[in-house]
Image 1 (cartoon, one colour):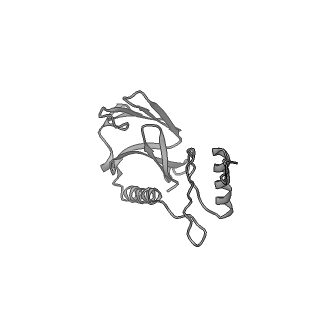
Image 2: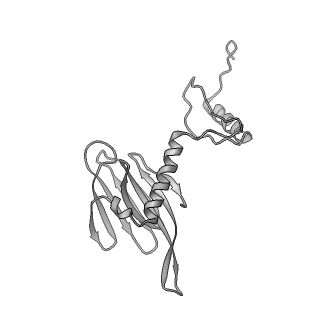
Image 3: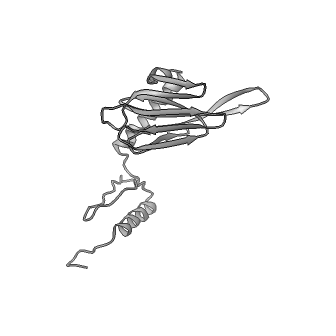
Length: 181
């Protein structure tokens, strides 16, 4: 202890904030606490966390994409692509990393799962493997992967959609924006 200030490690501070949040039923977004950085949790009078503008934007995008899926309009937002075999596509003219050069986005779909491979022109890459059908869309200046989950009914020889997941493709990774919508 120096003067009236107590110095704690970042991990102790983070764990303390998470414990306080649990006690108060507050949701805290996990993040890195920089040295000498104040930690602020906005709490309403009812004890619940205020919704951030990022969370509101995320919910708004989920609602808009769900409406497009319901109206069967999602294909209007698919970027140009080149099919290279019956089960694969390469999406063209997409710049995820923001360097002005096209990145390579490939979707391969098999009988039980799909693979999204992102190869950035800056050298980074990542994959997403799911047990659903992947569609790439350009929506509100971002690139997303919409995963459609289906359930096969052998007796009726058909399938039905049982849910969706939406990923935002970034220069670092694919981030789940909404799940099971």
